[in-house]
Amino acid sequence: MKYLFLNHKMNMTSIEIVEYLEKLKKIDFKNTELSIFPSYIYIPYFFGKNVTYGAQNVSVYQEGPYTGDVSAKQLKSLEAKYCLVGHSERRYVFDEWDEDINEKIVRLQENNIIPVLCIGERKKENRETVLEKQLKIGLKDIDLDNIIIAYEPVYSIGTGIVLENVEIEGIIRFIKNYIEVTFGKSLPVLYGGSVDEKNISRLSKISNIDGFLLGKSSLDLEKVKLILESIN
Ligand code: PGA
Image (cartoon, rainbow, N blue to C red; front, side, top):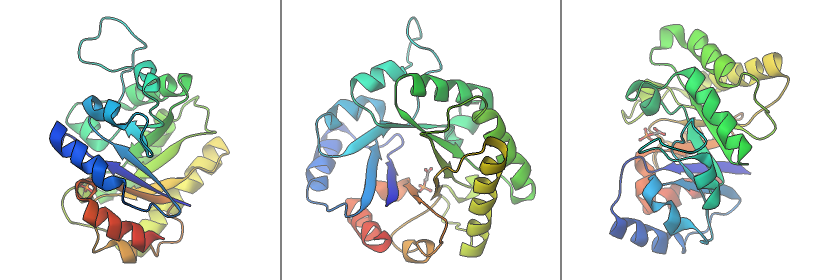
């Protein structure tokens, strides 16, 4: 079973999301754990529908006077199954630190929401150092029984630049190995960054990938359908 996570980022109007949900009903997910990550405000639209969903972010706080934030407890009350943490847009546009991300993972686990920890380097030159730091601090003192890693090189997000299969395979091996050696657990690792209906057939050949995180192509369900066919 592979994961296919659809990160809508800050896209779609309320009318578009209703249409999206209508179209989604007709799609066969096959043997894939397909999950949608809409903007917070659309999460109630998914409640009770026949698809799993999650949030793109969560507050470090439990509850209280934090204007504009959304808590893990609130997400749980709408039955969110997953939540992204540490997406590069949160890290670099909103200045989130590994320590914040670690705290968010704790909040999610307190509420039985599965964290999807996003990691990725901005430059190839210091790749291993960056990934190790993001994993070391992000996963510090965390229960690793139910957590997913999403590897997304920052220079691949939204750029159309996708690394060769051997390189991606090597990085995924490095990440899995680091987690096993450091924390004694094996975790699923997804790949993301400019994945689309054209490159998915070659990316699906990477043997150690557990699934994909889509940004731009997740907005078009015709593309999602083609991607589903390729990974199954
Ligand atoms: P992209 O985004 O597919 O548009 O490159 C991926 C992501 O940021 O999760």
